[in-house]
Image (cartoon, rainbow, N blue to C red):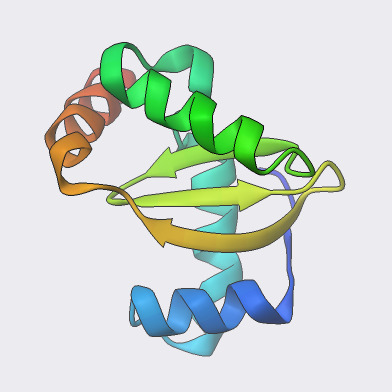
Length: 102
């Protein structure tokens, strides 16, 4: 398990957008980094969406999709921010996550 740092902005974003307590933020960030889907693990329109986000935010080291959210990490394993994944990609994300669990 990777140890991820969470910047203050990301902590506020997670608490506001996901609604979890302060103590669970780091755990969720670690789960997203370790178990989330990276750009090469996706396909189709989800891949195009993530690639666009990657080039739009060039200072991000990794972008991961976990559950219904897109997590943006810096090159130093710091969670920078979290966005809701667009609704049209939610089902595709859940299918890929289920396939990775098996």
